[in-house]
Image 1 (tube, protein in one colour):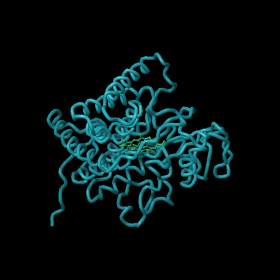
Image 2 (cartoon, rainbow, N blue to C red):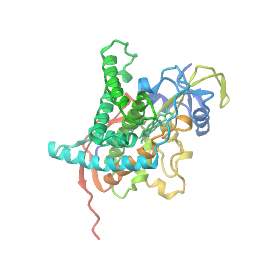
Image 3 (cartoon, rainbow, N blue to C red):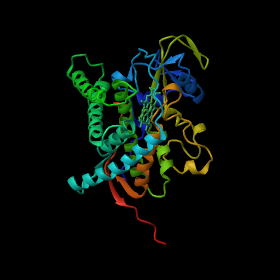
Image 4 (cartoon, rainbow, N blue to C red):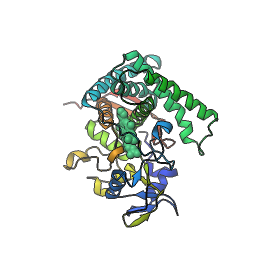
Amino acid sequence: MMHLDSVESAGGRLGAVLSAPRSGLVRIGPGGPWLATTPELVRQVLTTPSHFDFPGDVSRSGDLSGSTADTRSGHTVFAPVTPAQVARGSEVFAREWAAALDDHDRTHPRSPYDAMVLLRRPVARSTTAAVLPSIEPSRRDRIGDLVLAWIDALGPVISARRPPGRWSRKRRTEEAARTALEDALEAVPDRDQSAGELAALLAAGIQVPIAAGAFLLAWLGSTGSGDVDPTHAVWETLRLTPPTWITVRVATQDVEVGGQSVRAGAMVFVSPLLLGRRADLVPGDDPSLFLPARWSVDGRRPGAWLPFGAGPHACPGRNLGMAQLVHLAQWGTAHEIELSQRATIDQSRGIAPSPCRFTVAPRREPSA
Ligand code: HEM
């Protein structure tokens, strides 16, 4: 069976964070930014907005893993998605996932599925349907396509080593994609958010579930999808490979955290991926293993590693994201999924499995 590379073997920033000591508030590299490594300190950083502000401006960069040091005080807090939005988004996801599989089978019979491609439309249409209830489906789907185009154009801007200049081709392509999306959103009736805010909400609510869904399929396809509780498989995915694996806040004033003096303007990172590897937060065997059953043995509830963040910038789309992923896991565990080639970890924007190609067979029920 092909495998998904472990994040432990990944280098780059991911490697640096994973190899940092886990003893409280620590520096990543000499004189570098801070990293909060315990759940208490992470909570302190995420839930004290007067001391730790969200950096950058997601509506301009779309990069929720942020890393620019300017703050965006006054940013609108997004309201959590409502149960009605989740219900609408789930229904659309189920329909579009089935359609995407059919489409693939018709156009590329016998070739493996590619999760990062296959999930684009179902997630884009589901999240757009949830967020924009009042417009007709064809217009909504077009907005979903515009969000995908913006996400694609943002990729090279975010992953560039140095921020591309305002007139660079990457920047202009991104700007054109964002403008096309914002123009379409301006025309949406009865909206209570600006076009820029809606664009940021949709981009976050599409990019992250695509990566999470692909990781889920990669885990099922490399560890076996039989006899797995779908919801537990989702939690294990969000524990070992949370797409938003790191986020950052900027200290707005000199502040003491875990016995360390953090100066105003310093960056403090928190990582759900790192917390999810702490043995004290995870019941059962070796926390580095994908073992959905660990959540059925102990009475412990999953989520202590904060895969959806915490505080005023916690994920407003969490219930929709969970609904999409649980549907996907129900489908996945009803089939035999197998990775058809090794999947590596792409760290260019959050994390995502790349490539994530897999084959599917109906699940063979054990004979009685
Ligand atoms: C499995 C799916 C998802 C995961 C794992 C996830 C994870 C996260 C995390 C960790 C954050 C906090 C970032 C931080 O503190 O810096 C966040 C923020 C956010 N998420 Fe999600 N998310 C998911 C799905 C969604 C969906 C479906 C939507 C939209 C409907 C959404 C919209 C947002 C927005 C707008 C923010 C920024 C909130 C703010 O800055 O105030 N997410 N998400």
